[in-house]
Image 1: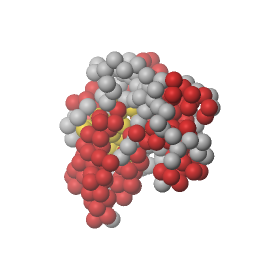
Image 2 (image 1 turned 90 degrees about the vertical axis):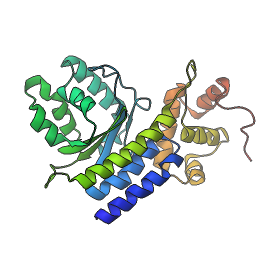
Image 3 (image 1 turned 135 degrees about the vertical axis):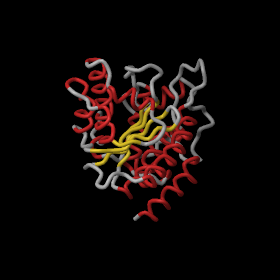
Length: 259
């Protein structure tokens, strides 16, 4: 299994620069990490100050669109709201500061062993367990952090080769995510990813979800996910509203006509 893991990691690093949406990056990480019994759960930008849990889905925190615990509509927003509520209620977590100081991957069990949380400090681990994580790996990559969840504790403990590969792919993912989420200063209109723009253009041409999926060579579930994000960003209730708002904000322009 190790050669396959290394091969998938090499392919990821070679192709991540072509990915057009943050969720594409995380879904591709799934292909790599599943070779070692891991699933990427989320990745986020570390806040500037400790105890800041003001995360916004699809802006500074991204979730794995393939994770079974996050497929239910609204589950990602629910997770983010719950994280903010618990962080503010219990005054942060020792894990946050610990994560901020780390420069190399560490596991959930290792963090528990070092920090020995008690009482209210234990909320982070209880929270993660409620989403099915019994162990996992946090990978630092610049100001990004990636969490790969495991359904059971590592036996034996995660070796240096696996940690090194996860560190490498997380670094490549962080570089691409930084490019995808960068926003020009002073820009007030919603910013759509390249993939969302592709979906929006095809919607404006009257294409169905099945037709969009076939054109972009993605699954219908993926198209549905992107459409939901577009509706949320443009504050629209249906396709007609979202296309009209896109033209009003000049996200779409009249040359975007069907061939």
